Length: 173
Image (cartoon, rainbow, N blue to C red; front, side, top):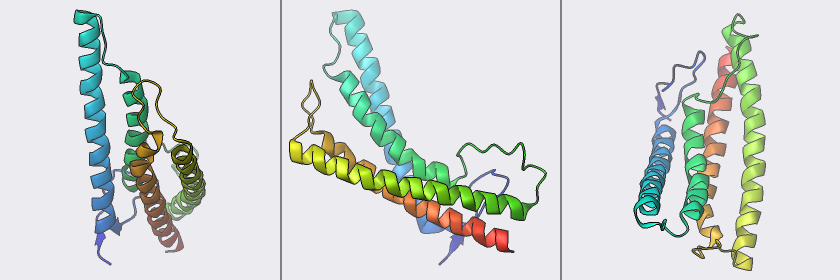
């Protein structure tokens, strides 16, 4: 398994496989494209509202559904680059081993939370599909959003596992 250089300015980076970096980057790109589409749609809706007195129907629904996709797609990239918030006030003078051990512990907690969230999202998506849940104005089936959210959350789980193992290995050195 080839390992890539860490992509972060994080004080305690760990190497991760190149294929994982590429996959996280791909999902972040999808999230960025959805975010840009939401931006353009919002500008168009505001412009229409100002000039014609009529916004784009369901604009708030599209932003709501798109936001779920954007957040889920950005989470793995944030994890792999060490972009999550880190409060190191009490540990900045601690050694690298201690910091890596604490990071591994934090990743373990994040991993468990990611697994729980993904599991519950799977059940939520199944129920949305079973009951035919739709957005109010555009009648978009809500479960469609989960076709991107669930793979992104699964990628977050895999990414967190790899960073946790990396920090654990560094802490044992």
